[in-house]
Every structure is written in C-alpha cells, then in structure tokens.
Image 1 (cartoon, rainbow, N blue to C red):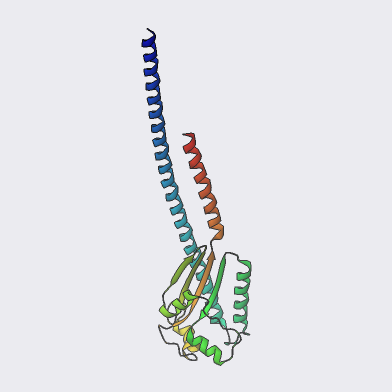
Image 2: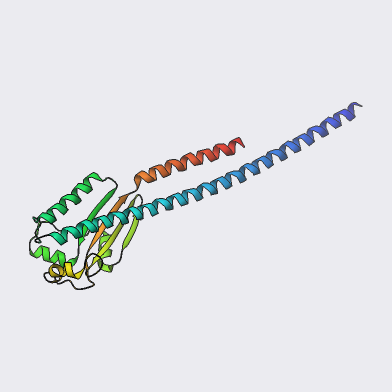
Length: 222
C-alpha cells in the first residue's frame, strides 16, 4: 500500500512537472511571438512616420521656395537699377535677412549663376550670392531641381532658367541677356532652402522610445 502511494505520488509529481514545463514553454513561445509582432508593427510605424516627416519637409521647402521666387521676382521687376542701393533690391535684401533671422527652421537664399557672378565681379560689387554647397553647384550645372537630406537637415534647390517660369524674356532679357549675355534656356541662378527637422525628429524619437517601452511592458504582463 505504501509503495503504491509513493509510486502514485511520484507519477503525479512527474506529470505536474511535465505539464508545468510545457506551460512555461508555451508561454515563452507566445511571449516571443507577441514581442516579434509588436516589434515589426513598431518598426513599420517608425518607417511610415519617418516618411511622413520627409514628405512634410518637401512640402514646406516647396512653399518656401515659391514665396522666395515670388518676392525676388517682384523686386527684380520693380527695380530701377542693378545697384544694391536700389530701393526695390534693398527692400528685398532686408526682407530676406529678416526672414532668415526670425525663422529657426527654414533658411532661404538666392544663388547667382556664373555669368551673373562674372558681371558683378567686373563691376566690383560688394555682395556676391555664391553657391553654398554641392547641391547649389549641382543645380547650376544640371538645371534640374535638386534635393537631399542629411540627418536632420533637408535641402532643396530650384534652378532659375532664362525664359522659363518667372524668368520671362520680356522682363529679364533686357538686363540679363543684354548686359550679361545670358541666353534663352541658360541657368541664371538658383533658389535654395534648408529645413531644420530636428524638432520633428525629437518628437519622432521620443514616440519611438515610448512605444518600445509600452510594447515591452505589454509582453511582460502577458
């Protein structure tokens, strides 16, 4: 009788141990699967939110360049001379400088093409709007819109082409063609913008950390 009870007890302990181990394995597998799915979902959300930041930057930069082109064209159209002291050019320069000082996230500037730069140097002009980086040089060389993102900075540059868009021959030809020898279809310069994306990426990174901790907590609870 005692032997029978001992054997029964041992059998029960063995079955209980097996069942307990099996339950732990199942729980571990379920936990790993849950963590995997949550991680994949988190990575997908991070990818799409990162893409959204990039697309938003492109729209902001495009709007900023449209504004820059419009204001610059108005200044060049209403100027009375090519000197920096001209009231329209002076007002334009002041407006651009004020915008650059007050805006922390967007910087705008105009780049002179080679022929305009050569003309201004021959006149010993005090201010030359030269290319600032490789993107500006690429835009002047190719005559095609250029864009690039480096970490938290989004850069874009738009060419100014004689006879196209706002640089119409009837309003630009007398000066840029007559005085500087710029022909129809040639690149006169470029409009450039730089967007600081650090505030957006700070929020993006904080949300990523919060979501990762939330997923880990949910997995532990399960």
